[in-house]
Length: 259
Image (spheres, rainbow, N blue to C red):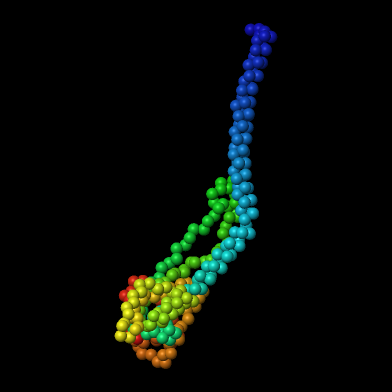
């Protein structure tokens, strides 16, 4: 069969169309898809760069704020004694008597109830980024040395009920001394009655003693002035210069001591 020139030209044109179609579908289209992927990746990278630039501008501020908060945590921790024991509660009442001139007829000596300090979540601004390059993940670790460590720290509270007798002026001094004490103290549930015969106030008051165990602060033994002790002496541990072991049970019936 003889092929004419016209048929050859038609075949060439068809072949050209096929080549163009194949070039578009397997070349240009793939190139477009790759271009779109690169543009999307570039968009993510631009977001990362903007975020990193913003963080870099605030880097010194973040470091200074972290150091300031660490120092503030250390100051707050130093406001709490490491332990509150029976001896501390009784001798504090004696100290108030000597300073104010009032009289404590009853001092409750509850065992300190401890609670763990919940750990806060550390904020990581970079965690929300896609991190195409992996550079963010490698440089977003938290420097633990710059953060105050609260692992193993427990807050303690001992609510001591007290009965006392004082004048009105002595009561004002009493409240001032308690709330301004260098170690953390607070007052609640105050009840007062006036004695017409003596002109004195008879009252009950709950003094909250706060402590923080697990810090670097050491327990300071109170000065009791007791020279000897028996088997049941509540000041025995202080006289022996030994800190009693911490109670194992958290819920313990409140002890009592009377002067």
